[in-house]
Image (cartoon, rainbow, N blue to C red; front, side, top):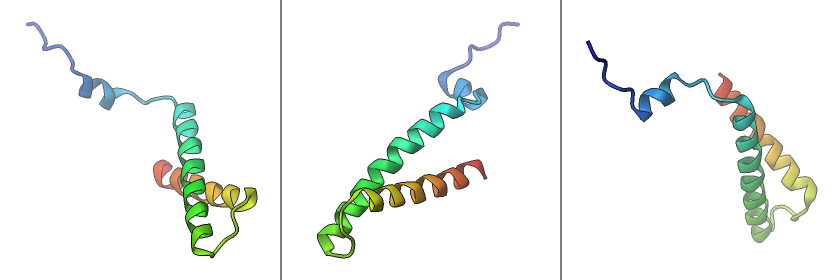
Length: 71
């Protein structure tokens, strides 16, 4: 008669989550990766380090990640 209490993994599987948290985490991680990629390319002499390249790389990573996750 008594059900076994649900565990942490059961709660995660049933939770839909908050999409704002997903977008915020995606934005922060995309900017971090964009900074790292542009910095590395600047070290190699491929791209000049600046705001525009970092924004472009971050935006590309953000959109790609969003499309993969939503799909």
